[in-house]
Image (cartoon, one colour):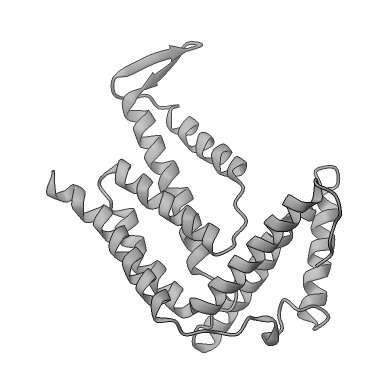
Amino acid sequence: MKHVSGASGCPMIFASYSQERRSNGFIQHFPSETLFISGLISMPAFLFNPSIASRCAQFALFILFNWLAGRKLNLIPLLIASAGIIGFNLIVPYGRVLFTLWGWRITEGALWAGLERAVTVEGLILLSRVSIRSDLRLPGSLGALIGESFRYFECIMDRKGGIERKDPIGGIDRLMLELWEARAGEGKEFQAGAQPRRIHSALAYAVLILTLGMIWAACLLPLLFL
């Protein structure tokens, strides 16, 4: 890692190293197959949660696990997408009118429904990012094809910052060329030796079991008060 002198460069170096360390530690302690199964178990508890408040708590838990996994989290696109989902849902008003904005009636029913859909869509994206990893190996030829797609997707997400607004087509072209070179063996992304050494930790499995318990408790507890 290249060291940058000066006070302005130190926080950036620390943040980058911290993210890399979290990513490597997550890969070492949490096998991709176990994360994939955990994601499948968590999905029904999130989708069928009857309470928007507890679903938001699950959403916050997904954000925490993405951070622990060293995933790049950019809240601005997340907020823009959520605002778009809520805005489209408000086009058809229903329920009690809360207020009027430039002749547009903002109703309680449409607002809550839009918020629920936004949390659900963004939550599923966050859950998939933490439970589906590029080193996931599924059985069969179809599983190999899906795993290859996951590896390409992760590389694209890691390098999407190289796509500039002034030249998006050129940026995409350069990104595809880099992926092709990596696939041909000139990069490290698709080499098996590039993955950190695996550590089978009982604590990691305990954390996963505890997390799954919290996710399902957030789904089942509201049912007791219906």
